[in-house]
Image 1 (tube, rainbow, N blue to C red):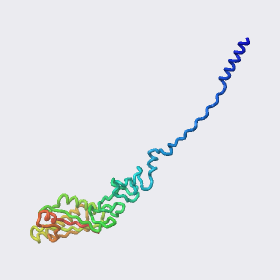
Image 2: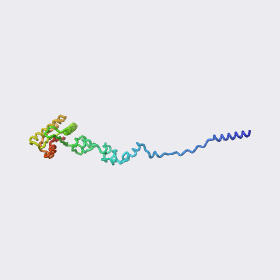
Image 3: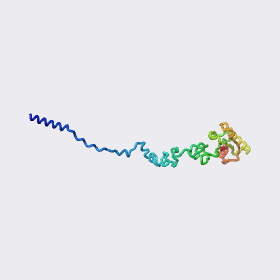
Image 4: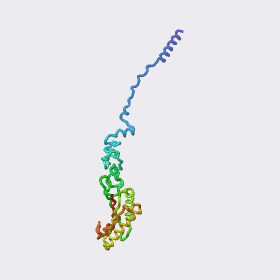
Length: 230
């Protein structure tokens, strides 16, 4: 009996030891990541480099047009101005005055303009084949452009001046130049430009712009000079 009682006490103690609460392990040291201080999302990265004089990629871009300076052909474009792939502001009428400074952004192509992009006088030539009273197809395209310009700018008038080469009689050439100028005047009118804005004169062979001794020179002298003025 004593043996079994002792054994029971021993078992009870053993059971009690196994059920005693264990000491809680020391909490692990919290790991604080520092990566948040140095890593950015794609969006955050872009804004992180948006500092004066730099592009989103961190490249020098002093005019902030999105074109890095090493590729920018116009590095001082005013901020906010739309630019082309070369970093330059647009000039749609090709007059040398950028659109954002141009008070007349639709001037006739190749017109001589003032600093504000507007022309006092626009002059271009129409050409004829030899002894024919029809202007060449290329010249007709130029005339159509002029008509478009005149339709949008009613403040302009047109002087049409006929010229010839020196082949033939002087009087004949004077008459021919006048007739050609009047034909072009009528052509402008048929395309919608009022007679009150049109004037035609002839100068014959008196005002050559090239050497009449060559075929090429004579071809240049057979012309209608068109002046658009205010």
